[in-house]
Image (cartoon, rainbow, N blue to C red; front, side, top):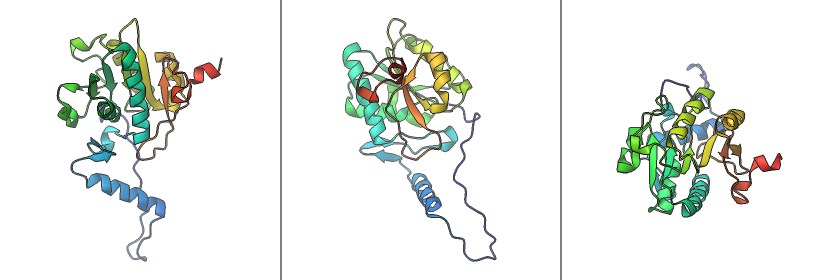
Length: 233
């Protein structure tokens, strides 16, 4: 991920003249402030029900998925792995990596991620900058039938570069692709990757202003809330 791309807006507080009465904050603002301070005070990271993650870094556009979202997607990947026996590539989605390893440590998974704090995962970690979409180990080329990707920014340019990475990683004859990104990317995602939204709606531990969707290039059947593409036929 590149920190030079787009910036997220953080919650702001209204400035009140110091000569006035003591400032008062709305309950919504207070809650946002509590969550922010809680994250910053955690030196060892965040725990999502027994899954330990480093603290989110908003400068890197990091927003972790909640437990239900991560477990649902991890279980889907586990089911696909049972039939394909393919290693899994997690592109910029450490939450999914962590839950997948919790659910089944025996599944071979590589985490492609810019943040070098994830070097703690040892050989499972591959440094990845989406601005250099194919600068990856040569052994990873066409090595995966299962790829889950979460582009760090909601821009066409970012998704296009991640699509180049997916093309580099994926086996040509068979690919199960799960893409997590904003609803606003729906048309671009369909054009670039032939993925379509599922009924399942991903959620983050901290609420975001943009609605996120889970897109797949295959029909998940009754899993994941069904496939929107089939409902439109």
